[in-house]
Image (cartoon, rainbow, N blue to C red; front, side, top):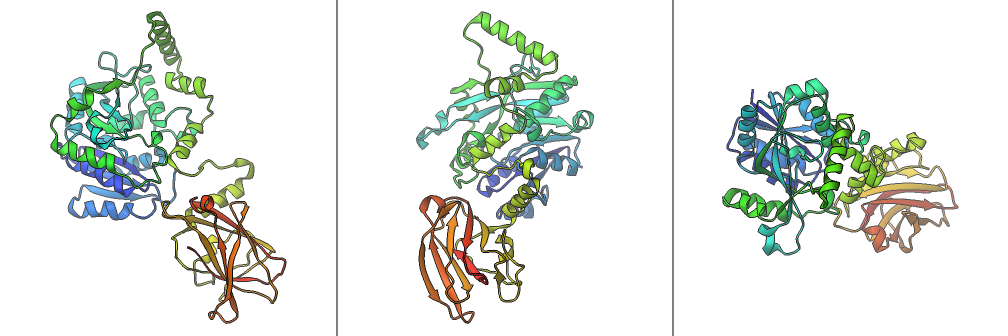
Length: 452
């Protein structure tokens, strides 16, 4: 049994995942297992993890059957499958210094702590690549006399080392949809309320690249930040000092000493009464209800809405299922007969596919397609139909009518016609596209379709 289980929640972005795994493999402390928990990831994650697992038996892949949509689910699944008495977490876009685990282990043992929190540098964004070592950063993990403070301490999970017994005592990570503030900080405050010994280590051990402050981060394939600092962590012994020169503390006291005194002690009072000061700050400044924060983060990251609309629960579940299954590549031809995959793109208004295609059940039918590669735009929808004489088709995409470009006869199947519609640039650059096709003539049968 390893001494430390490392849990890494992953969703897509294999170009970043490899740097996080490498930062684990370069740890000076070697008695660990790494569980990469795939949150029903799209293509790429499995291949990346298996590449590392082939040469390192400490690396394991855990694949969830359904997408949780935020990190508490994969992290809890990793906890359930882990075996070590100590647990560490590393987000797929963050990096560790090579001595991260050893420093926190030593600090935990020396302090007799249940949880050890390392200092973490939250990397800002700069436009000039030559200034990466002067990258502005916020320094988190600040404690008071070496202990967690509910007012001053913010610590991301990538900076934690936790005894497994802590989760057995106070429970797993709460769902982000049940929290006003972050799930991780809500759990940490709960640990403090339960009188767990949370020690803050005065050593910078991790680099944080927040996806919530990088617009479209889950759609981008840029890994320049992780690549640069991954190499620096390996080769530059002065990286800590160079980063700390430009760092500022995450807790900013009030400029007026009296206001700072009043604010600090008011928040301490809230904490002793059981209300997290961070939750109170989120509520006061943003007025968010539970789950609103994670929905905002998903929007910034370029991910779709995950919260179900309970006012129309069946339709919301249908939409969620379609978003999982109707991904398509540009140029990929989809057969709509019972042997093809067209059925997973067809929403309302269709009969079940048969050997000749799929017959329209109503005069208005809908299709849903999600383009796998977010950097490629669709400019044309092409469909092959077997139509009654004189049939006219009309189409719209994401609620806007789209112009017909061309119709021409096809050789296969006999009597079929190819219909091509042009997709406006703004619609074609969207990842998700809903098509509505209307005909006043019944009996139209869809045979094949693809995006170009």
